[in-house]
Amino acid sequence: MRRGSKQTPPDAAKLALNTATTREKWTLAQAIEGCARHGIRGIAPWRDQLKAMGVNRAARAVRAHGLVVTGLCRGGMFPASNVRERKRRITDNLRAIDQAYALGARCLVLVVGGLPPGSRDLAGAREQVAAGIAAILPHARDARIPLAIEPLHPMYAADRACINTLAQALDVCDALDAEKSGALGVVVDVYHVWWDPDLEAGIRRAGEKRLLAYHICDWLVPTADLLYDRGMMGDGVIDLPGIRSWLERAGYTGLHEVEIFSAAKWWKRDPDEVLRVCCKRHHRYC
Ligand code: ZN
Image (tube, rainbow, N blue to C red):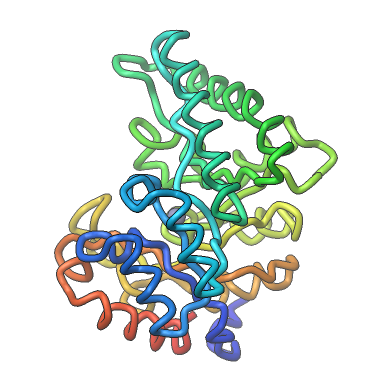
């Protein structure tokens, strides 16, 4: 059943900026100022830009503008060829939790990692992911930073994330946090899951407790690059109002975080123009 076209526009105050959208031209400090300038109330920084700015300085700037940090990108990347490297990655994830805490982030986004170099053991990689999340979950609980597993489109299973559907991510949540404490949940990024025939059921299954973040953009036809050719909302084929309605029905009340990797188009534009278009398209197409 399609109800997308009958949706009322989303609340403009729900828009958030994932700084991947402006990263080619703006530092994190500039992105924070840009959000404030355009009336965008939420921001999700990436750790490389956070490091460049300094965590404490970023936390102060975010607070000064009253922004919500919808998530810190990113932790994860658990699978590795040897124990030493796996441990190094756990340590890095623990650091990411501390950074998310310093920022007051709503969650730490986990892009869980793919196959270790030379491996064909996908099931083994998935076991390493579950073990990695289990290893950092106690620290995340202590810091009250929810861990948000982001299922990635299956085309990234080898190199970025071997968790590829919402159902898979929720199975990990069930295994490690059966009581649905809120410490572990998922990111619904439309780019990665829009195609999934079980998406609506997955969103319902996740429910309010496990829906930790919502990432928006659009799927272009044709897609010229598997990583860097995401579309602006309204330029592609994703039923954004439909997916939003599923989230709202499941109890999600969080922000709508626009995340656009677009080397050939949006990264080349003036970020102020990009943010203007984001606001307009969010109102019209989301
Ligand atoms: Zn995302």
